[in-house]
Structure formats: structure tokens, C-alpha cells
Amino acid sequence: MYLFALKLAKVRGTVDQEYYNKLLGELKVLPEKMKEVLKNKSAVQKFASEMVDKKDVFFIGRGIDYAVSIESSLKLKEISYIHSEAYAAGELKHGTISLIEEGTLVFGILTQSGLAEKTVSNLVETQSRGAYVAVLAAHSVENLPKKCNKVFRIPDCDDHFSASLAVITMQLFAYYLSVLRGNDVDKPRNLAKSVTVE
View: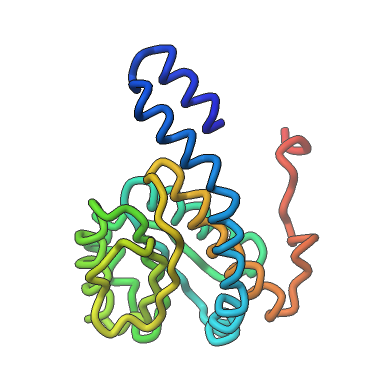
């Protein structure tokens, strides 16, 4: 789909040849960066073992990171049966923020340097309410929340492709949590395939 979008962009003239070549180059090294992310799976497994008794998990992010948050929350619910929600970080106000209690796990997705600072301020708000804050950030993202409980890093890449790297850590987290809770990850309960639903 990335290649299809890139070709369309080139044909429509919304990207020039130089940027097109740059994005193609980024795509070519994406598999190697995915392998790098997978090398961190033991750390994800250890973290999952520490979070296995959590009742609520919130994922927040902005832009593409919000999309990763939605996927992360969905995967966690599907196979671990832990209550989870995803929010656009800027919407973490009013009723939503009141759900944060002492020890609630809040996972911030921070892969886009230009949006990270605002999301960090939202994470700090949850910390002030007792949240246990974990962060998934690109290597180049600096100024993470002080006293952040856990940090996972992924390689830098063009923002357009960051979701492909970020989602790996999040899916591993859901997988290990599910296994540790004794669930059959190959047969999630009550999960109907879309083709069987009228």
C-alpha cells in the first residue's frame, strides 16, 4: 500500500523525484529496522509480566501515533481481555482524564518529533493523577516525561512509515500479556471473522 500511494503521488505530481526516491529508500530499509525492533522483544516480555494484573490501559498519541494507539488498544482488548481505550492526546480532557487513577497504565506513542512535545504534556497530566506512564518513542524524540516509568525505543524513519515499526512493540506487548494471563492467542474468545457477520 505504501508503494501504491507513492506511485499515485508521483503520477499526480504531489511529490517530486527527489522526495520520491528518498521515500523509496526509506521503504527499502524498513525490514531491517523491523528486525531491530524485534531484538527488543525480551524487554517487552518482561514489561508485560510486570503489567499482567492491570485492569485498565490507555494509549495516547497524535497524528499517525493516534492511529497506532487505536490499533494497540484493539489488539490488547482482543487477546488479553484487558479494558483498553485509545485517545487522541489532545482530547485527554474532562471525562477522559477523570478515568486516570493511581497505577493506571498510560502508554504514550511518540514517533513524530514535531508532535511529541504536546503529547508529553498530556502524559505529564496523567502522571500528576498517579498514572504509570510508559512511552514508545523514536530514537530522535527527546524531552520525554520526567520520571517516566518505562521507555521503549524504535529506529528513526520517515513519519509516513513510523506506524510499521511502532505497532510491532505494541503487538508484542499484547501478545505477551495474553500468554501470561493464560489466554489462547490463536483463538480469542468471541472474535467473529468479518466474513461470518451479516
